[in-house]
Image 1 (cartoon, rainbow, N blue to C red):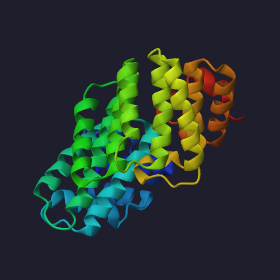
Image 2: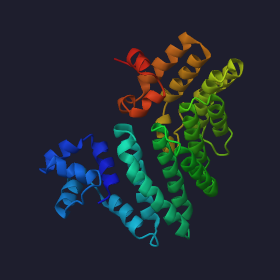
Image 3: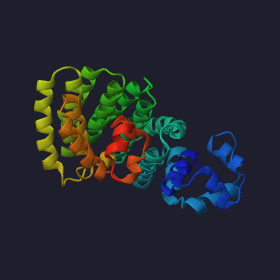
Image 4: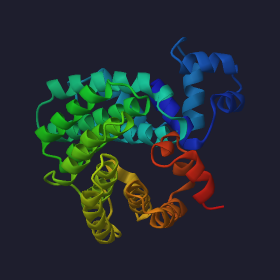
Length: 311
């Protein structure tokens, strides 16, 4: 049983460990020890959790691929991608701390798989590995850990090897977020801008990162350049409104996050009225799950959330 998959499944279903233990009639302390890696699960517990959480063949396939790296096929790569998607959705619910140990382990396994992989599935596996490194780097960004930098550079390198513009953009975006949390506005702006210049970047990513570059450019002291970037971001955002973003940037569906990013940029420039209008419109379109996600405070302050969120 992969603890990371179980945690992700709990998050998908909105279940706490205590509630899961109650439903399968197990001691909550025992389940807690299992989920924290302090005790091995019994076969009966594994079966009970699989039934409760609908752990399917895809989960088993992902575990099998990790145990047998030389037997890689399309189904195994798809299962690994699905497992990563589940972890990313779990981050929206539980935050980085409980996901980090499993994510570090999965990175090691994926890099070993990629090193040994041959044949037609290697590039697809490379995309999973690149996205996983970006995700792991993002967990470290949220924790304000400098480990984010080498992990995200690793993700960028792998994405370049497989020629995925959206995944190159993803790692660069999270690197920009790292420098933003450090208060290095110039370096953050450079990385957000680098996303917009990446070959193969998706239009939704380009629009969002142009707005973030405007925000950081304003905070670095150049409001004139920031206004130029923001006008470009708003134009790009209109063009991107009906585009489906890459799955790696799933939160960019629709206009909500584009409007939110533009509002944050208006705020940094000093356009208070436009900032409030854009932020309120953005928050109104963001799914409730994201409004309560731990990372939302990296976008807007708790005060803005309370004041401008829909009732």
